[in-house]
Length: 303
Image (cartoon, rainbow, N blue to C red; front, side):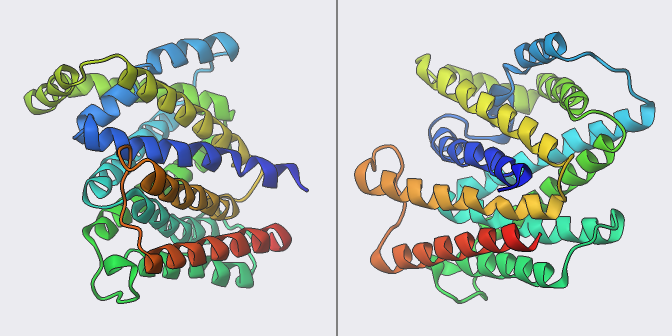
């Protein structure tokens, strides 16, 4: 089995775990995007120091500094709309909507980066988006004329996430992928610091801090943040050796684990996470899992 195919799984295996934590934290502690982004990135300075110690710092041109900045803003917007979606719907119905990114990234690969992607692969990728639209319709029925609010938030989040892929691809064609992450960490820190200069965001962050009475939530948030850094680091490396569209389709494995784990928590640990899960919904989720496995196998043999 090709190394790039195996490595492409790693980011999404970390991110499914992060998604579950996100839903729990947003419901209980991080009730707004400013608190969410600030506390998730509060250990970024330590990670930045670690990266500077391990990797050689490289000065880059102003053009690529702008590219990294735009990528960092896109990553923030990805999280902003994602948090709004989680506020309005269950995590097992929100995360699969990142499948919409597949179409955006595919268009970039074809028209911007001139990648050679088979027509049959493009058609198969389109199925990912069609199924995601069905999945987020009212109560998992197939009435696509009544979409949930989460759908609209995730369209914007997916578009912003696809821009992260674009800026990443442009950057790593010129510089090393770890150089990108070093500059990204720097801009994430700047974004978080900027929140403190605005009364509304500063007030929300301080209110969140006061509402967290114990240390354990902080340790959990920071652990989740570390997983996020590892996933992002691995993703950027994989993008140096494989086409972004194929990497993005492998992301569907993330949805499999989110669906399975959220169902397990809902059944056995409803005090931690509770989602609507009747027989009809469970069977449709199972059908979704089977389709994802088929998509991943297809990509393996047709990429």
